[in-house]
Length: 52
Image 1 (cartoon, one colour):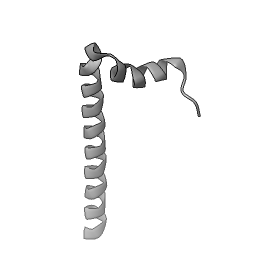
Image 2 (cartoon, helix red, strand yellow):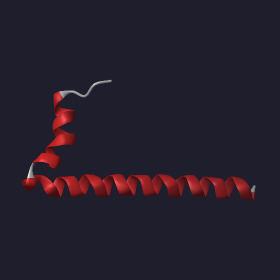
Image 3 (cartoon, one colour):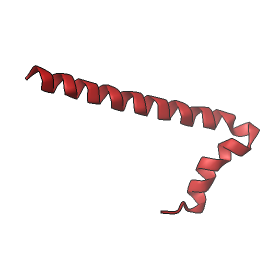
Image 4 (cartoon, helix red, strand yellow):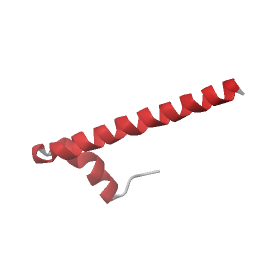
């Protein structure tokens, strides 16, 4: 599936403009916390299932 123009701008924009580094940092932080919380939820589910 290809990306449309707005998606390409959202993804590629922060990488090419120095003034938008704050946005890139926020996107990286969002990706980190999303992955961390997803892993944490999965771990809690495994613990709950193991204790049954």
